[in-house]
Picture 1: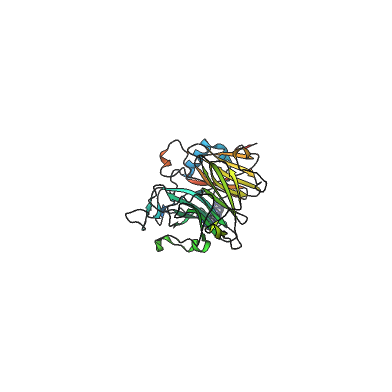
Picture 2 (picture 1 turned 90 degrees about the vertical axis):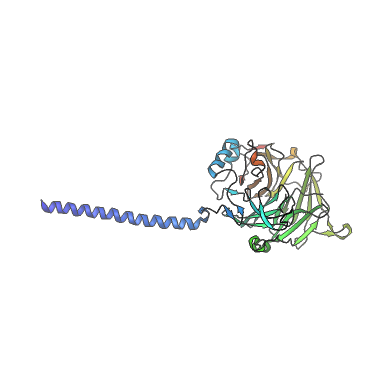
Length: 382
């Protein structure tokens, strides 16, 4: 009887040791897996609230609240977001505060902190960087570029510009590694200036404490001012609208070096090769596959994404609202857009300090990516 009890105890101890050993092995494997997971996805680490005096946190909503608000107010838009691909959203930095160069006295020309930056332009560089341009609503600070990591969405740095321009359009020429920025010259005429990728990567606001210098600049014969622009197949497309005369789009073919052709007989202005009429409230343009994408927005009304089959080579073709093949209803204050691989990246200005005071607006404090298809509910086909 005693031997049987001893055998039972031994058996229980053996079972207990096996269970404990299994737990230890499982814990070690799980811990090792989590370490690898963090290494694979560095974006899980929270970013500081400020990076060199530029805010990196959302200005209006937590991620949970942002999803909830978007689902309740624009459910069709929500359903067409790609949650499988990370990052799903890009938090717009600098809306709470941004490093910038002071434009007005006192401390003119010195680094400072702007609290009224308004995002306007959007560009993507080689699946490496996402760039947002912004200007000071009060015109007390020079405009800026915010650089984000394209793969993680993390804020990298602020680039200070040497002007107070609207910078309503930026675009990246992948063929010549050049970022073009819409500016205004000393005569208040439309101008575009550029920066190379190396210059963008080399710039350090904290150390240099001065604006970056543009490499090339060109004054445009048309339009008089620039609302938006984009690069596509060795051409820069520049557009403008006003409420009275409607909208115009101009195409400029670049030379072999990727620069504008200047006409010596026209005071070295760049002369457009083509032009088209457009709808009067266009804020952005992009090309993707066989489509032309235009963003339409004005005031606090719903915005629209207009999708056209690319027929610019046809005579007398115009990009008017009634010619759009598809329309997508979006929240108000839509700015520049980028069509890329069947998705559209959308930038809004509704989360700025001014618009955050409007309780009737959805404050889009993130760049969102929208899947564009013919058969989903948010698209109204003609």
